[in-house]
Length: 252
Ligand code: G3P
Ligand code: CA
Image (tube, rainbow, N blue to C red):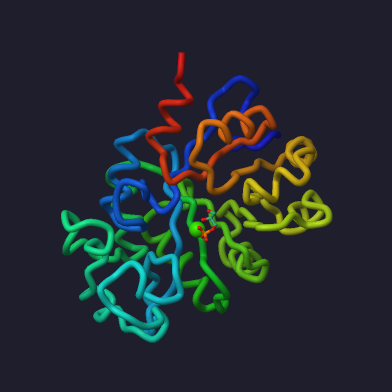
């Protein structure tokens, strides 16, 4: 059966909010998630990494330097230290005091308020670290609303072994020689290239569709590019401007 993630011809692009509505609010926070939800995004994208005591947090960079008032590598900071940081002031004064969410908090918010999560496990993770993430998704009863994506093949293999019920996506900034072969081998639901990578060989979209695999392309914020990718048949767009893409989807 064709994947439910494959977009039927003529239907709107699936809208995936990159780190939440990250052009409007501090990325990877619950306020960015809420704005994306109100804007009509289908999915929230995030980035997950562990604290030094093993708690999965939502943060893109390896360090907290750019997006908080602290410094240091996330993997060297305790969950208590991370929770004490201001993750909003760097973006705008009105967001002072916004906290970096744990993955558990983000999942709980999605479960109660609605929405799906494109959960990126960022960087190399051990099997035990992936196991902790999977356990949270199950505890929050979100296995039917989460897709795990990663640039790391090992991370996807661990996820498949630990939680065969979770759909998987492979992130790529350059295309594999044969995207269908690696996608089939890993049991992927989606193959997720950068827009620049996809444009080097757009025919892979149809190849993947024939194999039952969808494409979610990142990170695309202009109507010109949305138009181009829609014409190429991609299924979902990961964007910093989800409300604008929702509006563009429903243009007269
Ligand atoms: O979701 C894809 C995209 O987020 C991958 O790049 O660096 O923003 O995590 P990055
Ligand atoms: Ca990401």
